[in-house]
Each structure stands twice: as structure tokens, then as C-alpha cells.
Amino acid sequence: MIAPGQDPLLVAALGPPGLVLPPDAVNPDPHALDGSDLTDPEQAYLDDAALPDPQHGCIIGVIDDAIPFVHERLRLSPTLSRVAALWVQDAAFDPQGPGHDLPVGRELRGAQIGRWLTQLQSGAVPTEDSIYRLSGVVDMARETTHAAAFAAGHGAAVSLLAAGHAMGDPDARNRPLIGVNLAPRVIADSSGGLAPRVLAASVLFIISRARRLCRLIEARRDLPPNSVRLPVVLNISLGLTAGPRDGCSVIERLLDQVAEYPSDDLGPVNVVLPSGNHRMARLRGVLQAGGTLGWQLPPDDRTVTPLEVWGPVHPERPERPMQIGLSGPGLDRAWTAFTDGEQVTHLCDDDGHDIARAYHGTVALPQGGYRQTVTLVLEPTCPDRLGQGWIAPGMWHLSLPADAAPGDHAISLQRDEVLRGFPREARQSRLHDPAYRDRDDTDRAILLDPEGQASNRVQRGDTVNAYATGRRTLRAGVVTRREGSVANYNSLIGADHAGDLLVAVDRGVCHAGMSICGRGSGSFSVMSGSSLAAPQVTRWLAEQLAQGARPADRAAVQALAGGQTDGPTPILPSFADQIPG
Figure (cartoon, rainbow, N blue to C red):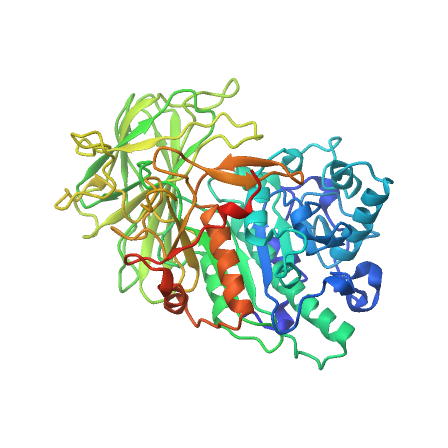
């Protein structure tokens, strides 16, 4: 685990915030916490009556968007909050509030939330929505995407599945929540380019506040220093469709470090992520030397289209850069021209206009060896303004030269879809393989890659969330409640494994989705996806840790669920029945 001396200041982890946050969100003078969070009741993470039992508590962390901190299922009583801390990254910085160690945004703590709830009960504040506005989380006068104003949202569904309990539930007090509302631009960036620094800072925030909550329990109950070591289960229901998938990314290495290294002032940290939803989306493929794969680009796409090529592992650093070729409407064939000194190539059509940029890199793997990678970024198929570059939609082709390194080269398309509330005219491109079939002769979906496929192909296997291939992270997959079968969309870890743990989300093969809590108390909606499997696994694991279980690794967590196993992958009970509606 990250050592106590490395707790944030989070400035270095987050880096320059200007690209993703409004200017008024920036803290002009970040400095370390002064200890008032342990002595001043107004700065406390939780009211004394809401502090968890030192022996039976488990902290739940959620990194998402628009966590509804006022919701009744995040309260112990009408005026007692279970939200210990919430970092709202895109909110205007409050110089009078807590969280002066944060580089941007504002922090809300349980004691302050409780005071707002008291005003709500007395009528001084008329509605829950008024608290969101009073706290600065929703401010319609600011230029941002107001995800926290949506009636139902991703963060609401995830946080309330992971940590929502009815008032009076005996487990509620022992499941405090520490959350992070990511900036809307980070959520909207489906390429993941803005995410690594922001996610790293968010993880550090949750670890930092979990430690401080343990210290607060010691101070309030007169216990010896570092004697309270509550475990933490961190839920990150986010993902990427492209990436190395070998655990070498920055965020995966951080999550492994958080989970692997013990600390003397906090319990073990487990991280749960969704397995992904793109098994059948044709976003993954394999190429070998001399091979070609189709690439269907849709019309009316006003965003750039990124694709990644990851070469096979080399024991030594490769002597020459990997090259790729591109052809399509208006382009016979263009090849990258990377050299040891030139790692960027501009590809042009037959008339000399720029159509794409390609970037080359070589990555040293933590486990040894090297992989080369090329990121190809195509211009939009519909220009957004006069003078902007664009390319023709239709069938394009990606190629490797005959002298490329032997072995599989992994092809990955990034997700490029419209997210609700974000003004992006995005259209998802697809890989094209003439031999690929979605359905068999009986019109049933073909869920696994056929054996004996050609080496240059589109694949269903190894479509797992690219954030979730570290050594220690737990992956949550989806089964249907009625049939108990793995959902068609659920991404696969390898050729035929659905996830480390499975949990029911969809009602049936023909009835997608489950009831989830909305933003307002008592409201609900219907949602689907492995993002809803992860918080259910988080909730189950928090129960096990609160009862004293201490699984040492992924295999031990699977063994802990072994009593509910029906096949090679453990299937957990669903928490869907605990959601109203």
C-alpha cells in the first residue's frame, strides 16, 4: 500500500487542471491538513453517532460521477449522513471549506452534510435538490455539464448499489462511504487520455480520507494510535476498450500497489472493476505479419477516431520501430515512417491532405520484456467547421508489413459513443472481418470465437476492460437473473472466461437491465451493464471483510465465494431486490 508519507498533497498526481476543469475550481494555495478534521466537530468526517465499529466496519470507496450524497440510503437517520467525504472535482473551490490539501474542487464531509440534512428536516431548506445547489455541487450558472442534476445517473446507480442501505439496517453504520465525483470532461473522454492522472489523484484521496477516518475513530473513542485499521473496498465502475491489457498501464500499476503493500495504519484495500460491455462490439482484433483487417468508419462522426496496435512481447528492446499501413477511400496505401528519432507520422491521402496521425512508443513491462505500440488517430468523417480536416466514411483497411515481428499484434478501437448530457457527435467505428458472424443458422448469438479461426481476425475473447488487467484487481461480470447465463455483451477476460466473479444484473436474456436508485430519495430507473455488477461485488466483499475475512489475493476472493459457485466462475447473490421499485 502507498506509505503514509505519500498521502497527498495531490497536486503532483493530478497535474495541470486547466484542460478538464473550470478556472474557478482551482485551489490557489494547496497545503497539508492542519489536524482540525480530528478536533473540530464542524470539520469531522462523520458525526460521533455515525462512526463505524472499529472491529466490524468496512469503508466503501466509489470513484464515479454525480454521487447523490443527500440520498436517504446514504443516511443513518433523517439527519445523520454516512458519507464521510466526497471530493467534487469540478465544483468551485471554497476557501472557507475543508479539503485545503486538494488542488481543485471542494470536499464535503459528513458533519456538514448532516447540518444540511437538519435544515432539510426543519424546512429551512425545502428539498434535497436545494442541498445540491447550496453545497455548490450543482450550479447552473457555471459552464460545465451538470451531471449531478440528472434525475438518474451512473454515479447514483453505482454508489447506492455499493453502499446504499435503508435507515435502520444494522449494517449501515459500518459501511461509511468515501467518494469522488470526477470532472464531466474526464467522464466524457471515452479515449481515456485525460483519466490516468485524475484517477490516480482520486485513488490517493480515498486512501488518505480512509486513514483520516480511522484516526478520527481513535480520537473520539480514546484508542491507541494506529489501532483502528478498517479495510477498504474501492469501486471504479469505469473502463476502456483499448489498451495493453497486460497490467502495465499507470492506473493498473497504482491499483496493484495500493492492494499489495500492507500499511500499519489502515486495513487491506481491495479494488473492484467491471469486466466490460463490449464482447460483441467488434472493437478488438488480431493481426500478424503481412495481414490486413477491415475498419468500417461511419458517416457523420464529428470526433477523431483512435485505434491502438500493441505488438508481441520482446525479451530485448526492439531494434527498429513497428510500422503499420492504412488504405481506404481516396488512399491506395500509406505506411508509417517511424525511425529511432521520429516517433510521429502524418498520413496523407492521394491528394496530399492529412487524414491521420500515428504515434509510436516502446513500453518496458513490469514483469520484463518490451512491447511496441502505435496509436493511430483518424480525422472525423464529418468536419465540424470550415477548414477542419476530414476523411471519407466507408471501409478502410489496416495492415502490417510482411517483415513485422512474428506473433499476434493486438488491435483495439477506443469507445466512441455519445454519453448522455455531453454535446459530442460521436459515432462508433467497427473492425471488419468477412468471416465474422454475429449469429448462427438458428439466429442465436455466437458468443465465443470459433476454433481454428484465421490469424487475422475480429475477436470476442480478451475484450476485457483495459483498466482491469492488473494482478490484484477484481473483475465483475454479468449473468442474467432468470437463466443464470453470462450476458451476451459481457466482455471476456480470455477466450472463454467471463469474470473473476459474476452477479446478476439483467432480468433475462430478453429483458435487459435492473432497477437502480435515482438521484432523489425514493426514485428509481432501469440500467444495464457490468458497471452494475462491480458495486454488487463491492457490497458483498465489504460484508465479508467486516466479518473478519482477509483474502490475500484474487484467487482467495474467488475461494471465499466458492460456496455459491455453479461452474468455473463464482456467481454471487444479486442485491437487486434491495432497490425500490
